[in-house]
Each structure stands twice: as C-alpha cells, then as structure tokens.
Length: 104
Image (cartoon, rainbow, N blue to C red; front, side, top):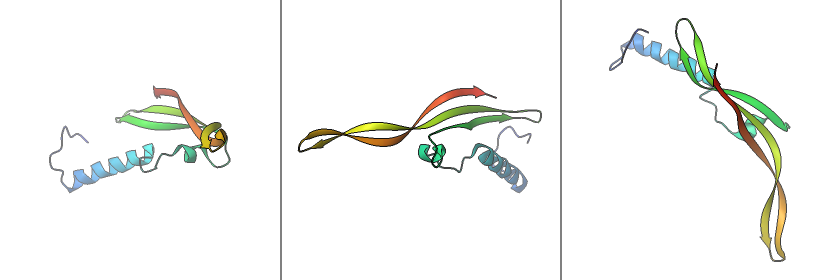
C-alpha cells in the first residue's frame, strides 16, 4: 500500500486495510474457534491438519509459517475413588502433538 505508518486513515486507505485484514482472516482461518475434538473430525481416529499462523506477503511472493498438528483419539484410565477403593474408569480423549513447524 506504500504506507510506512498510519495515524489516521482516510476512507480509501481504511477500506484497503480492512480488505487486507479480511483476506488474511480468511487465509489463516482467524474466525474459526480451535477445538481439538472438532479438528479430529467425526468418527475419525487420527487426523493431521496444517495451520498458517503467520504470513509475509509482497508484490512478488507470499510466505507463511506453517504448523502441522497430528490429532488422535486415545483411551486414558481415570482413577475414581469409591467406597470400595479406587477404580480405573476408561475415558476417550483427543490428544494432539505438533509434528512440524516451518516457513513455506
């Protein structure tokens, strides 16, 4: 946009900045609430998803920092105290781990 800093944006610059933000919001899915169970998907046991968490764009190129996360369902035993003593109750959880991070 050719602007070093903005103190007060006129209507045209304000629209350009808003349009740029909306484009970034769409590209990086900023309006989606992150929830590991939702990211895993319905009836899936494992899923890998990539996220763009930062971008740098110029007239000639577009680069972004990508984070890849592996999601998987897992069984975990939870200890619960009863009058007869502690028992183990199996519980299904969604686990996740970062498997890759890099600029692309």
